[in-house]
Image (cartoon, rainbow, N blue to C red; front, side, top):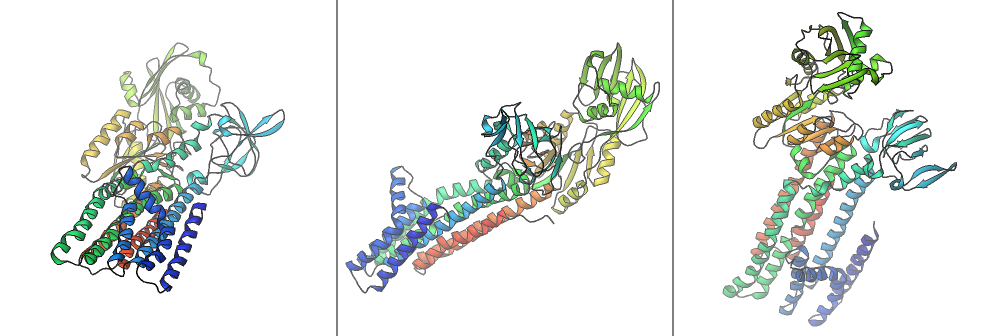
Amino acid sequence: MSRKQKKMLARILLSALLLVAAVLVPYHGIWRFFLFLPAYFVIGWDVLWKAVRNIARGQIFDENFLMALATVGAFCTGFFGEGEYPEAVFVMLFYQVGELFQSYAVGKSRRSISNLMDIRPDYANIEKDGVLCQVDPDSVKVGDIIVVKAGEKIPLDGSVLEGSSSVNTSALTGESMPRDVGVGDEVISGCINQSGLLKVRVKKEFGESTVAKILDLVENSSSKKAKAENFITKFARYYTPAVVIGAAILAVVPPLFFGEWSSWINRALIFLVVSCPCALVISVPLSFFGGIGGASKKGILVKGGNYLESLSHAEVIVFDKTGTLTKGVFQVTGLHPEQCSQQELLEAAALAESYSDHPISRSLKEAFGKEIVPDHITGVEEFPGRGVKAVLDGKIVWAGNDKLMKEAGISSRPCHLVGTVVHVAIDGKYAGHIVISDEVKPDANEAISALKKKGIKKTVMLTGDAKEVGESVAKEIGIDQVYTQLLPGDKVARVEELLAETSPKGKLVFVGDGINDAPVLSRADIGVAMGGLGSDAAIEAADVVLMDDKPSKIAQAMEISQRTLKIVWQNVVFALAVKALVLVLSAFGMANMWMAVFADVGVSVLAILNASRALTVRRPD
């Protein structure tokens, strides 16, 4: 409990004691007023001050104004009879108990998110003159070498220069399985070094590091409100003035015809207490905040309540193939030369692709296994989605797919193996082809099955691979529809077509690796990126980031979204129903101040308790 909460609790206890004492003292009339006044001011002075201050600023119709008007009015009715002194004190007392409970619940939600995102490093170890010094991570520059001891957080992104260890990535991915790292491996900030000593060369400043980007993402997620949150904000803006005007009419108009001013004023005061929209204004944002926090705990970063809400309306899920449904780790599985040896075929393809960082290019260079000397390579020209052309020692080499061969006017040969086929031509003559295969992720089949159980109407896969490769993967994991041999621009066009097919309320979700899918990620209703343990492109391009690259987490994100929306509307319906009932009863004189207290503070407490459930995340069915 915070210091502020402890002070509030002390005020509540003191006011409660003064209230009990005032009730037990057998005084009447004006003395009874002065007996209850200390108890009221002890518990309500801050509400009265906030109401006066907000009125001076032009912010009249808020909960402080309603509570101040209702309780001061209840005191004033004491001059017309026995008065409502105990009720006035108790209303304010119970209201402050509700505020304390709200503060505790919100604080608990924030602490839960703060704890699960407690990845901000406090220091970095830098070696100076043979001595380790602790410095602020902000002061470390790119290229500096930091030392990470066992049990310490990795403070900045970099690559391992010396040592080997197991790294705990649970704060980023939600997974408890550690990852082994050694010399040459990339490590990211926010992870915990579990065993050995690591020396790491820093690759990014702290402001650009993974930990800084993720913390900024989570901390600012509340700025993007869901439709339900915006609805409640607008609703409260018009609802509060309406009930104040209604209460004023109830206090003034009926007594002009029926008399009994004290009775009608009392009804109006009860009407005011009931009308306070605390339950809605507090619980709805808290529900979305809890949902985002619960998702973060599972390694699912949602950039705002609007995206969390939209996920519950998903109808079509579109997947990129490489790096999303497959591991994106390509290996050469077939060499089929025609006018040269296997080694010559592989060498020509690897040298031609040497300037590209595409996964297929990397696999060719790894299979070649020799150092590539760039002096022999000139005139490199890339053709997006098709391949490359290069001049090797005066010979023109084409390496790519069927489309590239057709453009070059070269007749290629089909292959009986399933995989990505790289055709190679040298000086206009077909030299053979190389087969490269990618492995489907272990949970890809589970992901598609879980999504269909969640009510997804269609699953689609988009890929630049050959028809045989794309259809083979789609059939293996149960994808409904597949489009192959697509260029980056073609993927956007296909998404446009699929968007036109969705219902007015339905949403299209695109899932990609976040590196080369930025145009499609931004065009879809919701872009989901495979975080790759925090790749910059993924975090910046998408609306939702899966930090452990598991497609099965999409179904879990939908489960969190649907459950959060369910909690939100439970609170809205329950709060409005109870308030409407007690408002009607108070207008007809059938409700007392105690019922009003329940309709306001009691409903708020129950709604906050219900909203807190959004923080707990269940496993998907």
